[in-house]
Every structure is written in C-alpha cells, then in structure tokens.
Image (cartoon, rainbow, N blue to C red; front, side, top):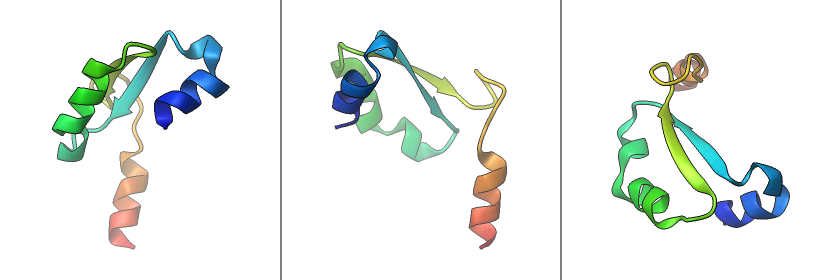
Length: 67
C-alpha cells in the first residue's frame, strides 16, 4: 500500500525514495530488505538516522518510552 500511495500521490518524487531508519532491529528485518530488493519503482535507498543523515526522531522516542 505504501508503494501504491507514493506512486499515486507523489509521482514526481517516485524515482528514488529515501527510507530513513534508526538503528533498531525492526528496521533491519528481512521484510524490509525484501521490500527494498523487490520494489523496482520507486527505488528505495535506506539511510540510517544520525549516521547517513544528521537528523533523527530519537529525542521524541526517548520521551515516549518514559511515558
């Protein structure tokens, strides 16, 4: 459904989509790897927050863990 939504609502940006993840194991699961490998359009580029890009939602996640 996500790929369909990208193609429908963001056709101009559908060449390459950056999938921003953190270091959590859920982001490195086999199903994510399969999605990236099996999707031809758009092409997914997986980047890791605070490693490949300078931003992250880690501060917000830390607050949610406390709540």
